[in-house]
Amino acid sequence: MKNKIAIGASIALLLGCFLPWVQFGGIISRSGVNSTEGILILILSIISGILAINNNSKDTNQYNFIYLIIGLVSIIIMSFMCSKLSDYTDKISEGMDSISNMFAHKQSEINTSPTAFWGSGIFLVFAGSLGLVYSGFELSLLSSLKIEKPNNDNLLNEIVSPKYAKDIIIEDNRTEEEIENDRYKNELTLLYESIRNQKNVFGNSNIHDTLSHIDKLCKSKEEALYLLKVYNTVYQKDLINELKSLNSGYDDIKRNVSKFIELEIIETSYPHSLK
Image (cartoon, rainbow, N blue to C red; front, side, top):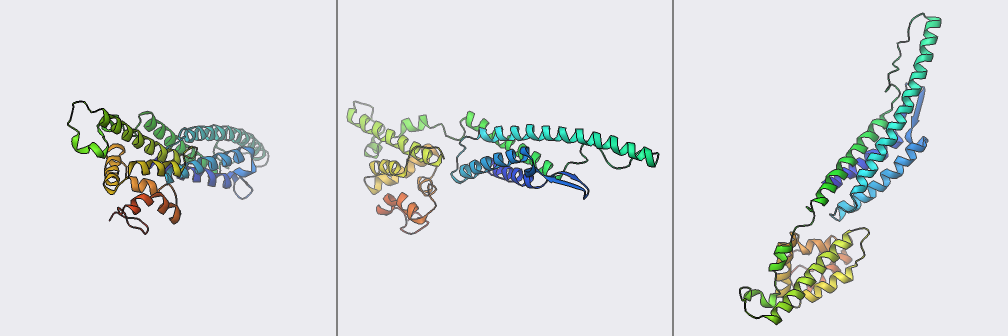
């Protein structure tokens, strides 16, 4: 949800750069992209937009602190811009008053308040900046509290290999069983981290790593069903949906879930629902 807010805020920031920043009736109209400040904010809006769209599509919150930085920088830039406009407004106000006193002997009735020359683009940029600050703060807070990644240490310690799934209560010497269980838990952890890294735009994993972990964990249909159940229990995510979300092309998606198709757990055709 916060990434969607960041997407909207980035769009507002971008559009605000093309709308008038300085406007006075039909005499003066100058958009943000006609200034150095506007070009800088335009570039920042594109960066935040790409990051927000990527995070939203991959259901992750990577580098969310960038939202906060871009939002604050944009507010500082706009505050500086508005300060300059206020100075111009004061000078114009003094000039108009002088002209009015010279010819009409009364003060000008033209609005020369500090915001008199502010165009709609300024308000939209401020709104987008505040949206990014909100998104960045909320997502950074969630990340610091580790809400994004479930605390699965206790659950993971209880998970055993399907080979010994029916013998969990045995507490005597089980050297071979313990080794097998540790191997299974390690592969399960590597699978989860591999999927997470692929969702991260700067991740260093690839789909072949993920498929390799799945092959090691699914030697039979029973083991594959067990893996789906365990993955959902420990990480609170549906493994099939996780694999499908890694790519957008039909052929790539089918490759990602090929093991579960081979074991006749899901349908061959998209959207590869459970049988």
